[in-house]
Length: 404
Image (cartoon, rainbow, N blue to C red; front, side, top):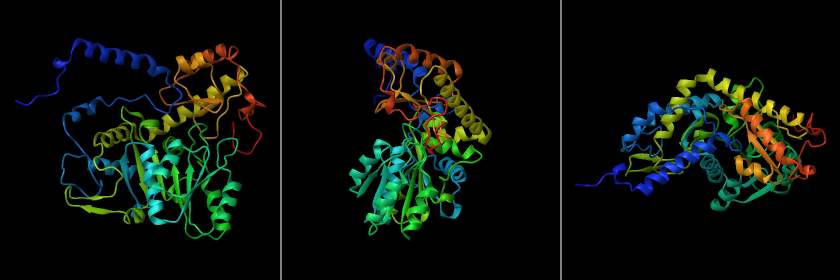
């Protein structure tokens, strides 16, 4: 008889290792505040589907010979995200990815196929994966300067485009930068294209975290397909939350059609980056959208923004020059002391740290972190001249970049 995986075959040492890992994750999970992973979720209703070898290979809209899939649920998720991103239903396509990096890779892949001689422009505050993607794809690229708040320097974009007018621009726009939550303004990017009378260009938007915040605000900055985006990447495990990294690659269908290839083996169009894809992640996103509904998602976004405002206020009360960008749940502060980094899971970068306020967080958790931060701060001082907004912690920076 063939063997099956079974807990009864584990040695005591292996069981102890699993128990130790579980206890470690239980202990550190509540103190993980520097990375955008919402922990307020319950997908236990879906665990029964882990009994099956489900696989969403290929284009979710085209069916597949491998019928153990959740394509139907995936398409319903995509339809909802087409609403959030204000897409033209007649020119929309997407699929559920492994996460933000794959979504960004897909957008840049479409852009390169559309404009093989194009040049990618991205700011120095762009996620680290983008430089790696561009190396993998061998795409010409220029890194732009950022403003103090992490937003793209549009003057640098303008000058760079002017010097390379012979090549179609491919602009990688951050809709919430990794460390500072800054949003690159699509109106200003398109203004540069109009200024130089450039008809052929492409804009990809990395909306990993903010893509599930901005749809629920009254006056969000321009970032959707209606605002000029050609493709958008959004993460699923960040604001929505879940046990598996996942995301969405969303694009104009006319560009996807250019790369589609038919594959007889699986009886499906090959339009995605990966072949085999998680069929559980689309089910998880479907479940979250159906149980939370728009009202719950909006409440979560507004709660997170309220927690971010609270964190800035509490930091400032204690004399710490913390700040955040408008519409951002990312709170920036001087780099924490080593003891704080050992106790709390905080993301550091070039003299700063940040916390990301998410639905599972409350005032007590934020107070606990800030108390630890301030207690250790006097032991390991940081050069705050490098921190935007440090001149006046009550008002943030005096630039026009939208710091609060």
